[in-house]
Length: 121
Image (spheres, helix red, strand yellow):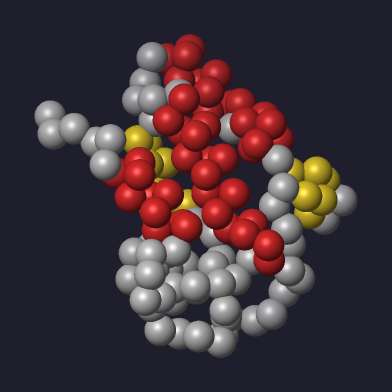
């Protein structure tokens, strides 16, 4: 199942660096500055989090990223809907369970909440 790396927690220390919402925003600072300098529209093509990240880390990571994207008026698309169960928001956090959850996951509800705010052009 695509290897078995360390179970990183978000927010938390990952490879010696503290990652939280402020750190994500700082990492995206070049994009923010580019947008301001050139008045361009930003589209985040793909982002995700592995569903079995410990302690709801995937939900918190996705939530923080989406809040940053939305605060800057960026468009975004989640990777990847129904491509592989590891990225799936329809599957629970149990890595060994490859069947979709009977109830929406908190990650799925998060995406649905943001999608519901979209307006037709």
